[in-house]
Length: 350
Ligand code: TXA
Ligand code: MG
Image 1 (spheres, rainbow, N blue to C red):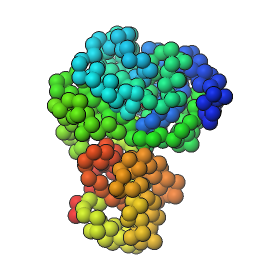
Image 2 (cartoon, protein in one colour):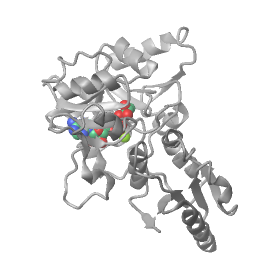
Image 3 (tube, rainbow, N blue to C red):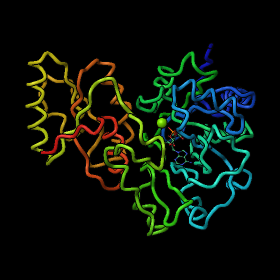
């Protein structure tokens, strides 16, 4: 398949690309596009065939439902009801990095919701995403624009790397600012439950409704036979080709341990990467390839760079990536959720 790639640099003169991409969506094609969380791979959520092609392009298991992206606060045409708490959350956090699980209407084909009676709905804040939905005139089903299992792309180059030749159109634009996928909240249960942590933190959600809680299963290794509430959470995810290990402990001890591990790996002839922070960069052995993921004192810089840094380690062909750990508080919850999954829960506790 020939993939058309266009980058939006000027919102006025490049509007034609948005219209062109919207035409592709209307005709049942696939368009990758930027959002503030990660890049998405979109198709008309109401078109069964178009949605089927998303699963094919990504190599995504069919039991993993998609999020439907909208640009209008009126959800009556796609969901059965909007509970009070969902209305309050929408008012506060939309447009933005938050997905609400609601009871779906029959117009949403089963393939989009993977046979569930519910659907995830999100209104992105990215200008390009919003315009694409508006010009298409339909809700857009969009998973992250990566090959299934790989770290989600946060810029157009990574999108092209995974999807060129597999989709009709790649619309480039700004780098994703949040860097991890949206916070998913199940609003069909009471109290509402966070199924995937993201840019909107539990602390922020609790200012709207103090009963909201995080599903306890999501921060731990998935248990054999236990069905996760967000089907996607059971798959190996966000993983670079290299093996990822997390070292968890007090900062100074972590640095010592990582430097000791580097020597061992080098003896075995392995190329070692270290995922450090701006604060710790200088403390590591120059025998390893050290990349900073951001500032420990500002975790938004870390979530923003996380997936890109994991992919950058693959580019420099390391065999193993040793990662510092972060406190599971605020944005640290989403960050550690992705990092633990990337590591397949391989964590060394000091
Ligand atoms: O930030 C985001 O949400 C990005 C951008 C592109 O908007 N999209 C995204 O989609 O992360 P995806 O497909 O990579 O992840 C969707 C997650 C999966 O874990 C899926 O299982 C869960 O949402 N999900 C979707 N519909 C659901 C439902 N009805 N009930 C429970 N979980 C659902
Ligand atoms: Mg994904």
